[in-house]
Image 1 (cartoon, helix red, strand yellow):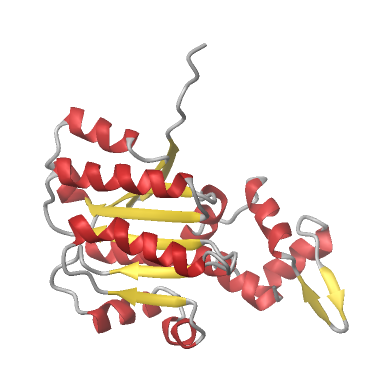
Image 2 (cartoon, rainbow, N blue to C red):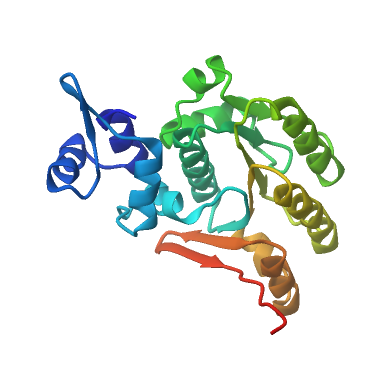
Length: 241
């Protein structure tokens, strides 16, 4: 990756990346007159906790492959900001980016593209390169797992991880949502699949405390985004002993 790509991914200036290279905090290679950073080196850098306080940088150090996380956003603007940041992390890791649109109401696919562009995702370029797909859904509750399975079959020989983003902006029956998420968890466990399913805060607020605990437990991690900041947590199953 170039210095410009790393700076854009982390949401910092190029001068900051050059400083990290000079200080040895971020190992860089000089090729001719340019500096290059290996993708694995950048991931190690983020895992060490040396990530900037940008949403993309924080998610870059949090998300794993495979993964199945639940996102909660305070409003629609933050929901789409979370979408863009999630997909930008997937882009930096060389994945196939897939944005499913069936769980949102009141937003056209073109408006969604514009929102993602506004939050730093180069939608037009990625679509032209075949690295991003915007997938409309007719019946999200029943089609999502099947749609993911088809994508996995298509990408089986490519070696690329699939980064899939789903949203719910309307009240959803929790039993339906949990059944879908359990199916996704099975898919995630058998492939290179990173899934982010996000809901608006007003949707999750309608769930009881017991229902919320069930929802958190159905995912490997939780992302909570509000105007005040970001909260990241992991669900860790315990062994019997």
